[in-house]
Amino acid sequence: MIHTYKESISGAFFGLTSDYIHDVAYFKQYSGLINIHWNRCVHSIWFRLDGALMELKPGQMTTTTYLNRMEFESDSSMLTTFSFNREFYCIIDHDHEVSCNGILFFGNNTPPVISLDEREQVRFDLEFGMFEEEYKTRDRVQGEMLRTLLKRLIIRATRLAKVQLWPEGIPDDQTDLIRKYNVLVDTHYRDKHLVADYADLLFKSPKTLTNMFKKYDQPSPLQIIQNRIVLEAKRLLMYTDKTAKEIALELGFTDAGTFHRSFKKVTNATPQEFKKSFELEKV
Image 1 (tube, helix red, strand yellow):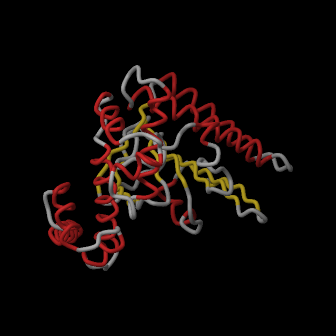
Image 2 (spheres, rainbow, N blue to C red; image 1 turned 90 degrees about the vertical axis):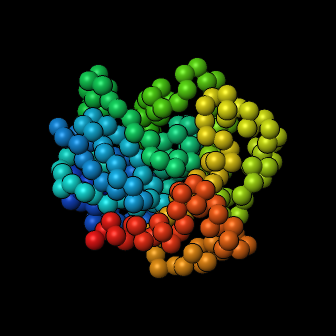
């Protein structure tokens, strides 16, 4: 069953379903959606995210945004999804409240996968019940109540992601700097290809960023830029008819040769080889 909340004036939308795989067509009519997916099945759910095959095990959560393309390999029910747009809750404007950017959403070349133990599953089941109950209440403060519940959900998921996916003992200020860098790359990768460009935006030196990322066993700042560019190139190769030259220009390269070398350095394949292998895989 789909539960929805809409605001006609602002265009805000917040939807909740316990069967996203079969309800996905409904959600596709809304643009700019950010999603939290939760596998409440007793078996794994398989899907492709931007062409890469992924497994979401029972009790695991992951996230997607409007930048991703999600295609399901298994016809499973009980994929619970919370879906909202910027007009309902802007995670960028409210980052000081939830600190989720660069951890749950955006700034990730691979989506975060969070595992819920029995205790956490009970907590999230209770949260889910509160959402369902609130959807039954139609009054002028319903939207604010749903936003409050969504914020709680995001904070819980972010805390788990920090514990499970981030280095132990990393100070909050260093976490914030790393995630801000990731989000900046996600925003400017088309026109900023140098670490120095992002160092300037963060008022740091490139060396300071490189040393800090190395200290906490993160991909280097340059690798993050290159991986993000290649991720977008893959999406364009898989889901559009654009040529490698057109993609190179779209991604800010002045010549196709530089783009080819950068792509092959990350993938060990040329853009043409990658596209051909993807097409053969679909047959």
